[in-house]
Length: 448
Image (tube, rainbow, N blue to C red; front, side, top):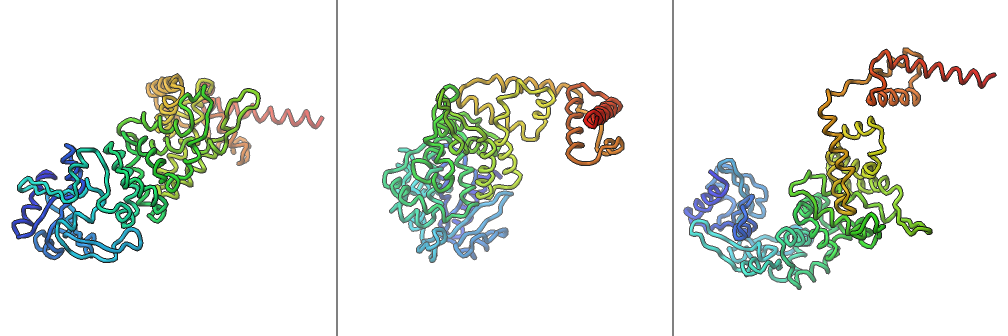
């Protein structure tokens, strides 16, 4: 059975057993917005033990709150007992939970558009929080007193921004005032929960609006404080007609493809994070420079991503993009072997995607991008790149001691191999012997 049909069958089984049961929350909102829900949550009058008696396969993910996972037909559904909550001293968990009815359960939820209940058996909507008119008017409004809702779970501060951006809604005035007032409370939320919410927020197509809502609400200063310095940071208009570094980031987010690699939004956000700290102005020309911003930016990006508990592998991938994004301006002048090594980097596809957005979000010129596309296509048509002509053991046999000099020789041999100047191991050994002879001759002249 499909996800939706199975969700309907669960409600039907609960109702047949004598319990009120409804689809609730995001799935109802999405259905009314003509979007296909990714999951279905169910609320019911049945207590946890009664749910377990009706469904043989359950997981007690939050039994103390009346929340179980029901596993049916290869799908899983969160099934929760109607409840009321009170006291949230830690800004996340209620101090007291009491089982209640559907109306009370609706009133404890975050926003009116998420407080709608739907009975799929009789196809009837229940709206005790005035969520349907807000949905039609594209308004995000907290249920009841906005400050109370945010105090109950501080992550709702970020969720408010995410829903507003993703649904292209407006935040109701009192809700926004409470959001601004309580923005600093987001620091009490675990890094993992903040990270997961930001990942959703920065997924296209509304990631630019999401970032700007973080700025407007004051949340940016607490979740990504390093980016606040980019807001007033000016750039030379010749290269950046879009204006400040912050405007550049916004423009790149607007231009992101609809389903990017997971690391791309973060490479966009962080690639120029160090520009405010490296900004200098030429007193003669007035030009603005950011020397070394990619190196410092890579260090800052790593600190930010580790603070947000990103996986090490993804962190390294994003940091590499930040560290290397300025290399793209020099590609036409690079030796062919250097370009090839660039193309063979495991992060190159992500780097290239970042470079394209970097150009489109500023001066608009894509000549280096197209040059690299051409080089990549040419490389793909060539036979597989051969292994190095010579290795460290070969150099030791020729009298070269391990150390920096050996590393430099191996790098130069590889460079000449990729350039096509050395094509065999014999040629490589002969070249090394020439270097040794030249070095000895130089030393002899110095002694004389």
